[in-house]
Image 1: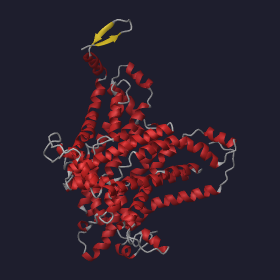
Image 2: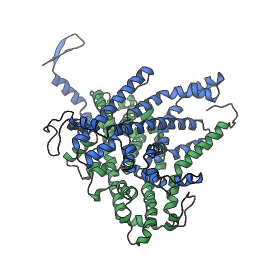
Image 3: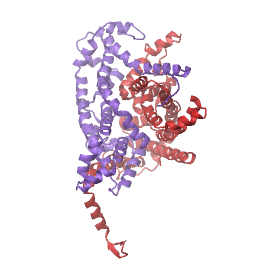
Image 4: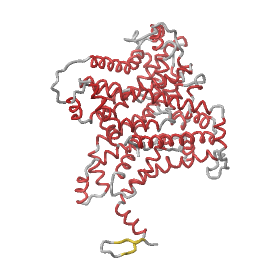
Length: 317
Length: 293
């Protein structure tokens, strides 16, 4: 096998693929050595599980390999779609994510905009530093803070008591779960998420503001005409990334906060996969549900990216 | 910022300041509450229901209980292992990946990037990964908490973006003198990237410090449990019974409560101590990854 290669002088000579590879390896041999552990990591821990998700289409039992397990086709998917839990899980997953986006997405943007208006540098730094502290606290600690404050005699009920509302047992009432989940997510992430927007805000050319002021623009006009358009690419990218994670609700916190009373609003696809797969050992079924989740996620990401590309010039790819 | 205008406080500024101060207070108050509650007298805490603006009574009983608890000490030790060994492996692998994939001379660069970014958007999921860990013989070993999470792709992207910022001219001048890729990495790229390496190290450290879920599915040997998993038993599953050695049963419930607060303080304090140092590097690090990446 040969490859025709035209050299500048116009002479055609045959160079084999082997020669090209050899040249490449010689040139970059250290790079190849360095990338090997990285390559192995992604191959083993990221791509093998993609192959392993095939067990969703097979009757898999521990002990047999993925390859030799009997074929099941769409059996487990049908079981899932027809199951009593399907709509509940889908609804809970989507609702929690959508609420998180509706309330949790604008919050850091607003915080960044407000902080941007602060003139005192020390005050601004202090607020920033304090608000991104909760991001570093573990889910377990946050969960326990929530359980503690939302308890029957916890601080929240004390405050409600001052305005005459009787104690509410938040953690066992399904209708409160989403509010608590989204509210605590905002508390924990508002500061950290605002960093990106603050960075974008600080890179806006001051001349744009000056031009706006010369045209007689007050603060509001400056906000609408300069600030927001300037950071809209950042906002759009962050939104695409956020929507691309819609099906991946942060299950760790849910797992710590939910109980059988609140399954009806708290149980999401990921927590269901955990119970079915890891706790009950129903591997093929859980893998099917998990694969469904991943595929929808990917489809949403691609769709949102495409929409964004058509509607604005910003997109992830 | 050049400003020829007088400094006048509009109503908006006043509102803004009040609102941001309130937000800061709401952010911090849970920690203040926990701090005060942890040093309060257990019995007064039990009787009292309300805001804590200062500790009720004073007692270090809860901290004593935490200090003598073997599970917590073991958890601390294990987490330290996962942090030190885990983060080292994390940073080394991430740096290697970022370095190689920022070299224009590396021909398969585009394909690697594609494969890596794709793996971020689509993954096998919890169950296939779990089965893989078991099949690899990592189940119930420390390495189950280190290898499967060896590289975080977002951190990799942040680091690579930062490495790409280093001007070609510096690399070229060293190459003319005969430097190979290892030497460029060690003598040029790494020394110039101290800030981003610090940020990424801290990201991984915080991740290892706070993680518990993987330990909960991969470890059955309690001697390997990280701190947060121990905490989960105490704080969420309400299992303070094992902690109360040498107390009478009548004392148990109130002390059980303050023990929880002390436990939270003890496990969060390390992060809070490192925090001032972290803080300086953040905006740079996240900016690199977010705005440009």
